[in-house]
Length: 599
Image (cartoon, rainbow, N blue to C red; front, top):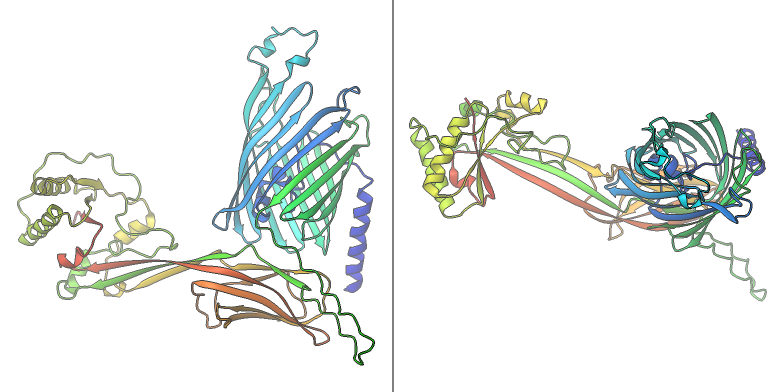
């Protein structure tokens, strides 16, 4: 096993230094590796990587030496600005906006767009990007040219839309996969015809990481067929990397390096040198970028030096202690516990058991499958029917005294302004009855009222509407979820440590340990916590601290840095009373809904 790891190690080292002498094809617009979670330019290659990047803003400028004309110092230029927020909507949705441009003495290109990504699983995300593509010609540099040429009858520039999509997947901590397409709609760039388009570009990539080494293989199928690309990278989780790459056409060679300079800032430099004079479109290029990461993980603490040994003291020199051997990091510092409760009760003084048969399961509501969604019956679902509600109709005279008493009570409450509004919901077939009730209450109280038609579009709701309620269904229910579903605690080892056993301890504000996660031999790169305590219950709202403790092979004890997270709980409690007592119904209501069922 050790021999195999040694072979992999030397193989990656060989690829890394070999690629610095090999070429890579130039791109008209800037791209990073499709699996590059640390490269700010990778969002242009694969929008799905936004979900796995840190929140950041980046800006880069690239100048091509000599360019199109030997007498020009910088023949043409490129640049970009990118702003990425991987968790802009909850913990799964990310977004970003960016601008790219390409400027030359003859023409200019630019793409201004926005992208979104969704983290389907903790290790899987999908992303899409849409942009405004602009191509413009610099007519000031045209010589000996007829400006009345019909090719330019509509102007010297064109705007069109462009789109891209991608998927990023990390099945194992050391393996990354990417697939997707750019120029999905094949944007038309012609000024006079529809025959000149930007061809659709398909891509796929796979990366393998071993400690601080990473190798990437990509296939790009575009204008010139399938082009294999290889990249080799030496990186550190603190934000440093050195990367070199090659495509098998042997056109250009590049070398790129990025360094974290502190306070969230990193600087990036890329040198591109054409090898093939026929394929190369410049004599070389230099690109400088600045990246600022928000809420960046603080730098690892320095190792504590061993105290000086005093020769006049007859004692052994103390051993150095390194509390930063393992450093904890996590993007989860705020979790929301959503809980929804439905409390149902029967007023046995007014409701007889056989009267429950007139109710359906839909009438007594359901918890649904997401506590964040308001899922109550008769709450404006779908579009109303096209059948108009009659404006002039009288209330039927053949109604029971109890019904008239209930209507009189509601009218009195309206006159006293006891509640804010009244809605009358009409099932298909009961519109005439609803209009008559509306007109009667409106004329007696002088208050404007509305009649709305109920539309049930969900198949599940339709089944509930036809299922009678019974005593067994009149019970309390609750549903809960945590967002995010689990805490992802990353462990970063500053150097190789021989571990005997380890334990992650989670404690409350009084330093009482409420949950522990432990293991032996190897500390995993990611420790997951499902928000359950030692007793199996959900974690309660509040602030919690977590810290890693471990014992080395020689029996020495160590501990990591301490981190905190905040748990918030949002509870939606719904009370459903089945009663004929109007006083019980009208206790501090915001609104009243009268449902006229056609049965």
